Length: 122
Image (tube, rainbow, N blue to C red; front, side, top):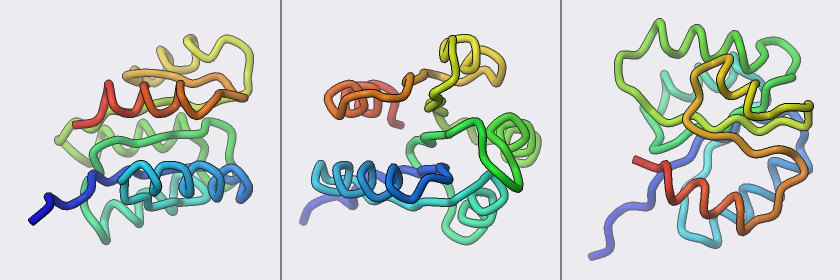
């Protein structure tokens, strides 16, 4: 019997990006949950538990990535790797701002995405 797939939480407000990333990651054997903003992501965590990794956009309506990271770390003591995904300049700086474990500058290719996820998943 195969082990259950590792779960990723994708927090992204662009539905085209969500569809593309979720479709790709699911073909690679991951289960993907997606929230359109930080508030939806927190609701998914409360309903379904911790993922193995969080892919986090920074600029979103309702609750942005900075606020999500702040609330997430204050609420949960379990550490889950966070990878910042941003089109903003200096993505590494954005990752440092929230003490993320990694970053992807948009646009990124699927090989980079996959290697980052595999390197950081728990």
